[in-house]
Length: 276
Ligand SMILES: Nc1ncnc2c1ncn2[C@@H]1O[C@H](COP(=O)(O)OP(=O)(O)OP(=O)(O)O)[C@@H](O)[C@H]1O
Image 1 (cartoon, rainbow, N blue to C red):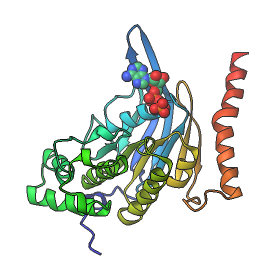
Image 2: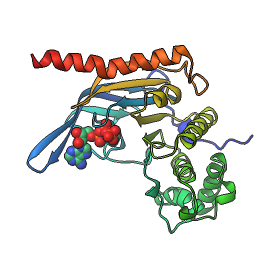
Image 3: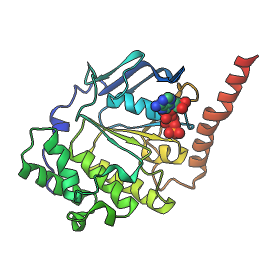
């Protein structure tokens, strides 16, 4: 099988350096009349080829962390390094796939949607953009729909286009913010399977936000557990031993229960102790 030359691999950081370093990061929003602290002193390293999951309850600052890595929110404290360099604003080396199905301009075909950012970010000729778009559209199984418009596609198909569009940029890190949360359970599982198959083939680096313990265990190889309000690192665990076939096994259930305890019961105990 032909594999396109990938800047992702050519620009690889030395293997002894993490690709992405999040160090003591505190993030805040200035809401009218108040300051909202979304995360506090969060640190983790993401290595090339990691499928790194940010897991925590609603409101613990997962999306805010992803936005900060994307360069949309500067840290109040701490720093974020990519390939050893502090990030300054958004860049094509970090592309985000969101949950919403309306992230594709509806007036562009699937192929135009995938090719457009390649042209817009510069350096890619229109024929190369088309070639790269077709390559990744084929990878997500949508070759027959390259000339279709988004409004003729299902939610799952639109998410596949968003993934193809992101991978076509060959980013250093692919950022995904609950990309499958709005899909029905069967489609969600199929998308998880497809994402893992794509990862096997392309070996991109993934930073993925979820509030599903099961999704974190099967999609990720490492998981950061965040406690709520503001989000702090509660624990970091390895999850490479689990995949989509692990689902119902007692060992998988035990791992899921352990994470649940770490996220909720121990957090409540800690908060309770703090209140006394
Ligand atoms: N634009 C904003 N202005 C003010 N506060 C915000 C803004 N966006 C998020 N917040 C607050 O920051 C905190 C973290 O929000 P964030 O969306 O990052 O959490 P999350 O873990 O991704 O939640 P969810 O799983 O529900 O998406 C929350 O308390 C939220 O209310």
